[in-house]
Structure formats: C-alpha cells, structure tokens
Length: 182
Image (cartoon, rainbow, N blue to C red):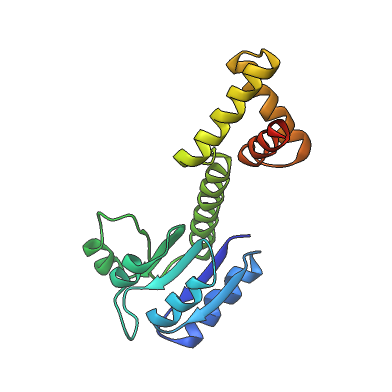
C-alpha cells in the first residue's frame, strides 16, 4: 500500500480528500495544514505520495517539493491559471475543480508508478564496497586452489551455498574462509 499525505491549508478540504481516497481503496497516512507538518509526517514514512495545494500557510508547493525525501511524488491541486506557471518540473498537476474520476485515476496511476519503481529498486543487485569484493575474491581464490575449481565454478559454489543457507554472498564468503583456514 502506498503512503499518502494530504497537505491542504483548510482541514475540512483535507478531510474531504481523505474520505474520497479512502472510499476508493487508498490509505491516507495523514492530513496536514502546513508544509512543516507534512515534512515531519514524511520523515516517518519511506515512500509515497503528497497531495497538496499551491500554497500552504508556511510554504509554497515548490518549497515542499524541494524538501521531499527520496521516493516521494507530488500531486499539485490548483487552478488552471496557477498550473500554467508551474509547468516544466517533475510534479504531477491536476486542475481545480477536478472530476472525481480524473482525481482517482491520477492518484491510482501515480501509486502504480511508485510501486513499480519500488519493486525495480528491490530487484537491483546490492552494490558492494571494495572490502566486500576483496573478501569474495579471497574466498573464490581459496576454493580454486584447494578444490581445483575454475573462477566461475567457485563463484557458483558461493552463490549456491548462499542461497541454501539464506545468507548473502559476503557472509557466505566469510564462512568459507573461516572453515577453510582452520
């Protein structure tokens, strides 16, 4: 479920948007009337969507957008005139007054994009530092010398042991080194 924060200057408007979203199956994590409230709520979450108006009592939408943590998107709700001035940035905009169908579809589309990005990030292989790379290379070298394996066979062996034991490759290399050095 994608985290959603609604940041609108009027509490009643925020509640209306929250109710509309919840009625359509979205989870709303908070309603804020200021940018600072929204930012403090965002610190508790890891990714999601901020729905906000052009102006909050303590900051403009652009200031809030500049402070958004990585993994958060913004949906700006404003009049057509205001939206003409806001073009050219990576903020999704929806003209007020909006049709409920358009609003829900826009939020759904943004949530799906955030979820796809989150899944893609999880599938990326973890980058290792030079220390970890050296540890893996040392374990492979030891396997190659003692067991007469090729570099590819030693790597596959470490991968298989890693999967079988449920540990990552670095931990497996450490275990192999500890066992073979004794």
